[in-house]
Structures are given as structure tokens and as C-alpha cells.
Image 1 (cartoon, one colour):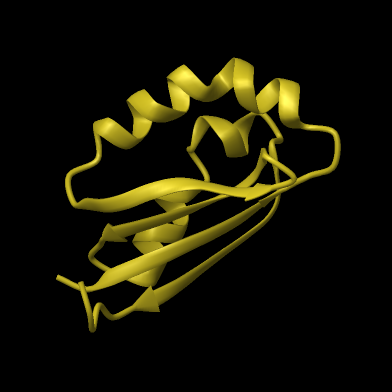
Image 2 (image 1 turned 30 degrees about the vertical axis):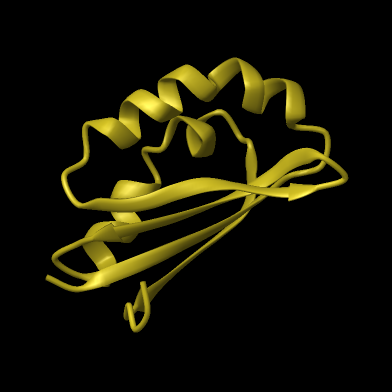
Length: 90
């Protein structure tokens, strides 16, 4: 099954919302089969976005799934890019 990378950048001023919604976000990720890795981008010691690599049926299916991320629904993300990704090392 293909892999896809979700590259998510937080909107300005969303740190408190990110922290408040984090438990729901982690639960949502944990319910998805095929999540290969996930974690925040860090700037100045604070989370400022997310990288998620997940197996999916298609780019459209993963894009649709990403719209239901609790962070996305709460407005944490200012931008989300979903691209097919291929693991080479690791």
C-alpha cells in the first residue's frame, strides 16, 4: 500500500488550542491502521506543525482522512499538504 506524508503547519497563535486538543489528536491517530510515524515540528522549543506518514489507498482518501484530524477541525493547522512518499532508508 502506498505511503503518504501529511505536512501540516500551525496557524499563528494556535499553541494553546494545539495543547488542549492533543489528547483527541493522539486518539485519532491511534485508531488509524498504517500510521508509520507522527510527530510535531519544533521551532524555538515549541510545536509548530506536524508530520504524519501513513499508508493509504489513494491521495484523495488520505486527504479526506486528514480533514478529520482534531487539530484540523479545531483550526490548529494553517496549511496542510498531502503528498505520496516513498521510504528509502530506515
